[in-house]
Length: 146
Image (cartoon, rainbow, N blue to C red; front, side, top):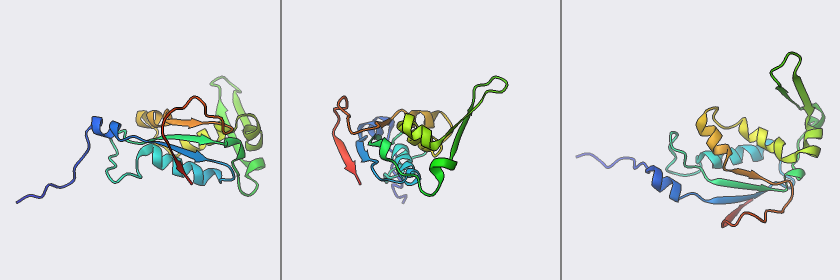
């Protein structure tokens, strides 16, 4: 009489199906790359996606120093944060951030595309970003994504 309907994975099943993806950021546009990474971290690329389950995969990004920003964003995009003290507003231009900490530029872009709750924080822990192609300490089976 009733159909079986949608089958939801248990937490144990979802954790056992996690994979590691390798993304080469050389020559890729920052925003487009960050949105693809956010989809993988959330698990939205899987057919059995469930919003309340932490079922996303791990992402390893190499060559973050070679990310491209289109237009005049290198000189006009400003990242701001506040220390919490009076007059504590700090600013840095994207060009300086890319030169000094290239992995932080991609990290902030992906962080802005994830949920702003404890699930989003857990997803960000599965993101590994390296400024060059040296990833000697990761021994997982990496699936390369173009």
